[in-house]
Amino acid sequence: MKFSHVALNCADVDATVEFYSKYFGYHTARVFDIGGGAKIVFLKLGDAYLELFPAEGVGPVLEKDGPKEKGVLRHIAFQVDSVDEVLAKLGDQAQIALGPLDFDAFIPGWRTAWVKDPDGNIVEISQGYQDA
Image 1: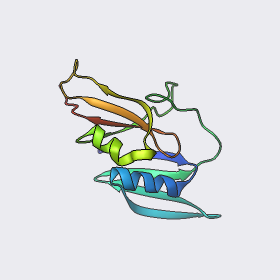
Image 2: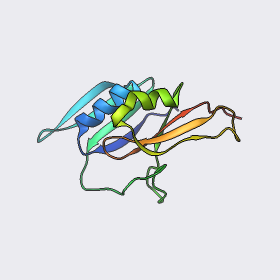
Image 3: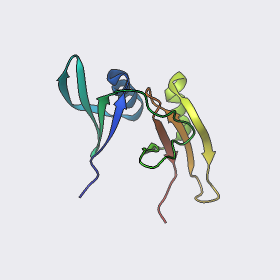
Image 4: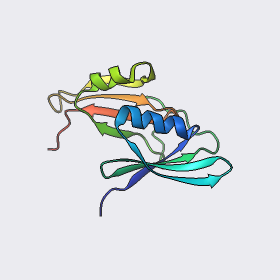
């Protein structure tokens, strides 16, 4: 078994495609026309996918490192070489929710920041994490 995908509901699927493609290296793997001008898009990075759906309604307000309610996705995370370089690349798109924070007390060199994607989903960017 291997991990497949995370599904996100998007106010603007095209804006979300642009965000994850431009800043995180995803590319469009497949698009399904579901009628009425709406579509479902699969973005791919390596073996992992993001499945983007048109949103129906308004969700919780997402802050800091994400919601803490049971049954709600807290955040998605990416390992990067440099948190600061990714934040610089994001520029004005970097809606920082929390951080950057250093976790050197746990793992030397571990640094993390949480930003919001175009729909307010929390995205963790982290460098230096290592398994025990």
